Amino acid sequence: MINQDLYTAAKLLQEGQVVAFPTETIYGLGARFDDPHAIKKIYEIKGRPSNNPLIAHIATLEQLSLLIRDTPTPEQYRLMESFWPGPLTLIFAKHPNVPDEVCGGLDTIAIRMPDHPIARDLIHETGVPLVAPSANPSGCPSPTHHQHVNDYFGEDLYCLNGGFTKVGLESTILIFKDNQPIILRPGAISREEIESILQQRVSLSQPTHTPLSPGMMYRHYAPEAQLHIAQTPAEIQDVLDQYQHQPYPLGLLLSDQTIHALTIPLGVQIKSLGDKSNLEEISRNIFQTFIAFDHTEVEHIWTEEFPQTGLGLAIMDKLRRASQKE
Image 1 (cartoon, rainbow, N blue to C red):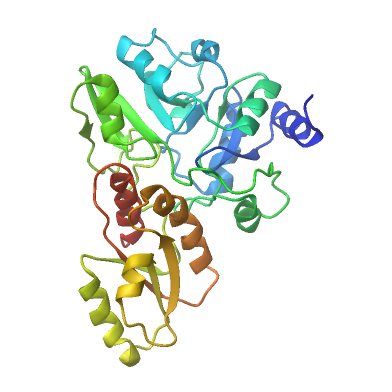
Image 2: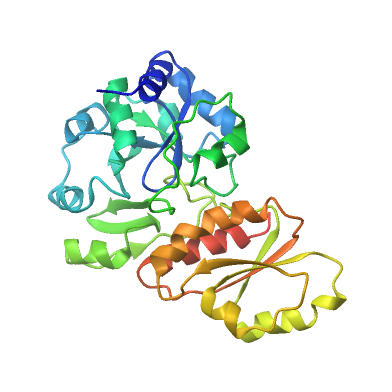
C-alpha cells in the first residue's frame, strides 16, 4: 500500500508541480516528462541553462517506448541488463513526442532506471517517466540528504524524505557514436565495469560548452569556497606551514591517511573524506562535505588527488570541475 507522502508527491506531479525525491545517487528535482510547463519550472527553480539536458527516469523497461525513437541496440540491452536499476544513464535518439525542453535542444535523450524504491514507486504512482536533474541550484554541490534540499529551496518545495543516499555520486552517462561507447560524464559505474560488459574499449568525452548530456558544463558541483587540488601531501604541508601568514580561513578536505600524515596548525577546519583505500566511501562523502563547508567561513579548501581508476575517475572529475574558476 502506498504511503501518504508518496501519494501527495505523485498528485503534485500529476498537477504539474515540481517535486524533489531521493535516488540511490543524489536527490532529484522531478517533473512529468510530458509536461513542458512543469519542466520549465525545473530550469527556473535551479537557475539551470536551457541548453543543459535533463535525465529521464523510468521504473520499467516498457516505459522506454514513451521516450525513445528506435529499438535499443544489443550493446545497450547488455548494459541495461547489467546495470539497471542502477546509476548508469544511456543516451538514445528521442521519441518525437518528448518535449524539446527535456533535451536541451538535442535530438537525443538521457535515460536511467534508478535503484531506489521511493524513486521507482513515485514513477509508478505518477504513471509516467519523470525528468529530473539534481535538486540543487545550478553549479552547487548535489544534495545527498533531504535536509540539503530543504536548505537550498526551503520547505515550499515538496521533498520526499529518503535520508542519506546510498551512492552519493551521480550516474555515469554513456553514449554510442559510430558503435563506439563514450563516457560523457564519469559517475558511479566505472569505465572498467562497462568495458567488462561490452568487451571493448570505452572512451572519455572532453569538456564542452555545448553539453551533449547533463553534467558536462565545465565548472560544476562547486562549494562556495575556492577548491584547490594538491598533487602531493607535501604540497598541502607547504600551504599549512604558511597558513599563519594568510588572512583567510582555511579548510582541508582529505582522506584519513593524508590528515594523519600532516602537521596541521590550529584554526584550520578539517573534514574527512574517509579511508583513501575505500573509494566508495570517498565518493559518498564528496558532496555532503562540500555542503558542510558552505556552512563555515572557510574561503579556500585544499583537497588531494586520487587514482583515476575505478571510482577514482568520477571522484577526480567532480573535484576538478568544482575547482575551476568562473
